[in-house]
Image (cartoon, rainbow, N blue to C red):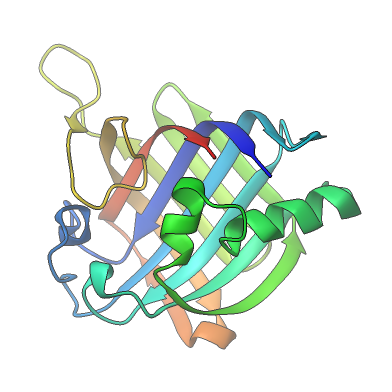
Length: 200
């Protein structure tokens, strides 16, 4: 069993900018409520092509990010075929190893895995993420004096391993998930974007 997944990530949470979880410190509010989405520009799992699909999660992190016990609701692109859905589910459950299994080891419980319409739009550094009726976020990076996005390198708990994390802010962040007991409607909180290459 193997996979190779290349694409872009959008992430928002209820921490302030910058989120302390990025370097393994405790969340600003004691807990962290994050939405993370992976869009696959190009991807395959064994012989199943998943290019063009998006997988996202709503996550409740009850304490320090590295201590695990995350509660996670997974959303798989509604356009996925049954075989794509089952294969992607197995990857995110940690059953196929690699970096996504490293994340899965931090999960205390996956409360749901469901199909959802997902809008993942990233243009010129500006991002928008919609996951069904549960999540809506709009974000934009901070810019360096030279006009390039500001980045964080070498952070210990990055969701973009081996790639710079682009430091961003969410002008809008709405998350509603009763299974996770989350109901947020925030402005001006932490966001991250970047690229990933996951292989196993």
